[in-house]
Amino acid sequence: MVQSTTKRYTAHKNNIDTLKISENDLYQFGCEFEFYIDTAKYNLQDAIEEIKNKIVNFTDADILVDLATLPTNSDKNYCIQIKPDQSLDDNGIEISIPITTKNGVKHYINNILPLIEEYGYTNEDTGLHFHISTVKQDGVNFNFYLYMLMCHDKNLLSSWLPRSGYSQNVMDILSKNTKAKSREIKNKKGTIWNLEKIGVNHIEIKAIGGVDYHKEVNKIINEFERYAKYFDAVLKGDDIDYRQRLINEHKQLIKSIDSSTKEEFLQAVNEAGLIN
Image (cartoon, rainbow, N blue to C red; front, side):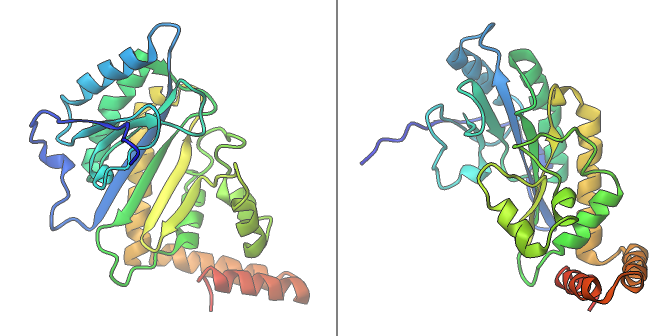
């Protein structure tokens, strides 16, 4: 049997209620922070030990530390993980937070980004990823395309500089290719969309990142709140005016194109669930 390289540490009992999902919560959230340890200033292992010792003061979750591989603990999604990032060089790491509330994500952003500033740096390789999903999956099949269009219209998907090979704007791909071709592009190694549907009820947002992204605390929190707001609107169907505008715009486009293009376009919007 291969011995695990993951070390587990118990956090202080801080009793921070805003971090815990309650029975009344409809949504759950997660976040992953990619960055490099500044090895010109710090020994890698010493820096991670210090980071871990500071994290225990602002979380209720256990902390899993592994510098060799990804933790495999069965409850890892309910722990903070400090682990290597496979897309980064040797001194690149990722901190992922446990499943938490919207306020919990903002709590961790406010506490983890200063640790990146103290012990490391961010560059064009690095990014911050959000996860948004419903707590329950019963009957949920989230409308990814409507959410994508809404986030695009609100300038969220293009708010940060593009990071070629790390995070490509999903709108740039889907607006120039068929759905089948877009899926083929997505499945190529090293191609990552900045907005992805992970499951029927689960969206991952990878639009945020780049040089010194960790210094943009207010911008990151503002955009996170908007992503969460639009997720809620799309799921509940509260965006009636927006949907009607999309339908009207697509109908006008249909009228203005030739018959062969029109057939392909109609198929695309039907697949997207915008017009039957």
